[in-house]
Amino acid sequence: MACQLDLLIGVIFMASPVLVISPCSSDGRIAFFRGCNLTQIPWILNTTTERLLLSFNYISMVVATSFPLLERLQLLELGTQYANLTIGPGAFRNLPNLRILDLGQSQIEVLNRDAFQGLPHLLELRLFSCGLSSAVLSDGYFRNLYSLA
View: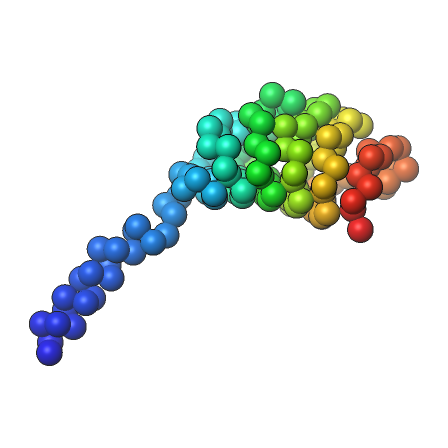
């Protein structure tokens, strides 16, 4: 009985890396790059990616060419960057079906007024603790984000 238990435990430990996505990689549906010391957004080639997790990195700029066309992407997590963040015009335009955009706890140094254009299905925009003034509420930054609740 003890041998069978040892065998079972061994199989579980051997199989566990296969069952869990390893850090700084993509499995096709989830691109997991949390805490990978990235300074720019990695080029995601897999068009089936639904979740892109980029928190806890040193990404400082998001521009219109930062992402390839990712039509299936629903969640983009860019919160908690360790560098000040600049978000340019049309930064998320290649993510047409994005539902959740997390920028929380990232110090946003520059936010272009057209940064959020091209997100017709965005349901949730997380901007907590970003250092933004209340002017973003009145200066048209969120125009055309009709699906936000």
